Amino acid sequence: MRLGLIGILVCLGGFPLTAQKPSARIKIDTDRVIGEINPHMFGNFAEHLGRCVYGGMYDEGNPLSDENGFRKDVMRAVNQLGVSNLRWPGGNFVSGYNWKDGIGPKDARTPRPDHAWGAIESNRFGTDEFLLFCERTGIEPVLCINAGLGSLNEAREWVEYANESRDTAWARERRKNGRDKPWNVKFWGLGNEIDGPWQLGHKTAEEYAAFALEAAKVMRRADPSIRLIANGASNYKEGSDWIGWNRTVLGKLRNDIDYISLHMYIPPRRQESLEDFLSASQTLDERIEITRAQIRMAQSGVTNPRPIGIAFDEWNVCCRTGPGPGRDLEVHKLGLEERYGFEDALAMGVFLNSFLRHADVVRMANLAQLVNALAPIVSNKDGVFLQSIFYPIAEYGKQRGNSALDLLVSSPSAHTAGGKDIAMLDVSGSWDPKRRLVYINVLNRSADTDVPAQLDSVDGRISGNVRVWQMRHDDLRATHDFGRDRTLLPKTSTVPVNTASKTFSYTFPRASLTILSFAPGEAR
Image (cartoon, rainbow, N blue to C red; front, side, top):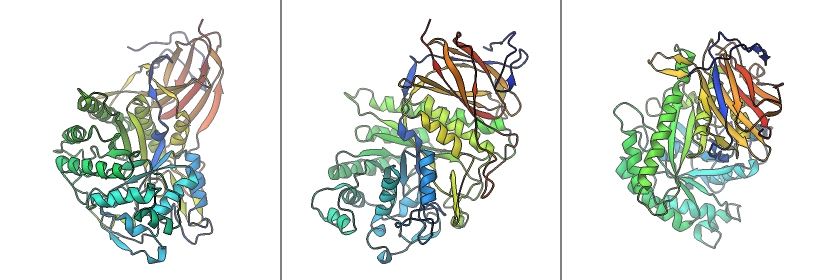
């Protein structure tokens, strides 16, 4: 139902509300909680692809690097982004990777061909370098095992190397390599995209489930406290049965895993409308909701079922800069170095709003990737710049630990080329009970329509002003680059409201991403 704002002639944030424009309503009740926004929802992913690791995170000999070879400017940007956890070493790369090649004296490590991306892997950045990078930046590491060409014993020994405190062979090896105390890696991925025919060591669902079940057993024998992420669907091509894959994996592993992963990339906008580009939220919501139902189905009839969440451990807009693995092994020369535009920043709202709306089951998410390759941070030998997608992720991340809210949203619709209508406003919200702040996150997907909205707080009158954070630009394709990185900065402002009322109005400008925050007062 569309609700008109008859007779309202106020102007908030510079956008007048009129009765002629299509209008929306957002009803806020802080008692209607979906779940906690897990801090691990704001994770990232680093793969040995292009310049993500070498020349990005790790740049030996560069004056901008520290004594370990870590780029100090990159680490500062990573902390500004608010990265909570970091998945490594892949990605497609991991299915041909032996972790033992990346330990010990660097000059003694053997280079190997990387058959995922067509490069030569020097192995100068390995397990200890990655875990030290995470320690220095305060990030939780997520190690992903080789479930493609790797063995169960390699996985078990990796856990022992990283986490064993007693005097064992692999703990001795770690100590010999300069790390006395264990790294205590908590999160482990049981491979990457093994459902995809492009993957080295591709397996059927039954083959993967059998491998992962044994991997879970032997890895937990090495450390019973670890938490495990099983491969959910990543292959959504026509003819693939992604729902059947998840059903099999969950059926076999329901007592042994803590997460099932999902991957999704939105293709970059080319000739289609902005509304079509941002309508991907329908597919995203559907895949999460189907997987949540599958988790419940797998756990039905189980006494005290093991809690299983979704780890959305690869997501982004991809790819303008090259084909995928297995189709062109020269892709590493391009390195998937996207230049993200303003429209891609809006797409961050598609993903993050969906994750928040499903905070009861999405408990981890990892943007792909950290630096240079599909990344919010871009480096060269002289410095870094921040891409458009950096800013929404950093701002949404401030809501970690909040309670995601189940909002009542009524919005006018926009038409898509696929024949489906989508709501112009894509909305999520959260509540911080400690600071008594409500956050309303609104993506206006319409390229040409400003949408006035009435916001109703069930909790009572508004206390003080409404803070506004907003990204808005007339050129959807506008980008940043070295020396030109101020074009797409978000703007902040405050909007005065009637503190005697529990309702206020705001017009969300076309093609914009807005976060409103305010304090509801005591109900009257």
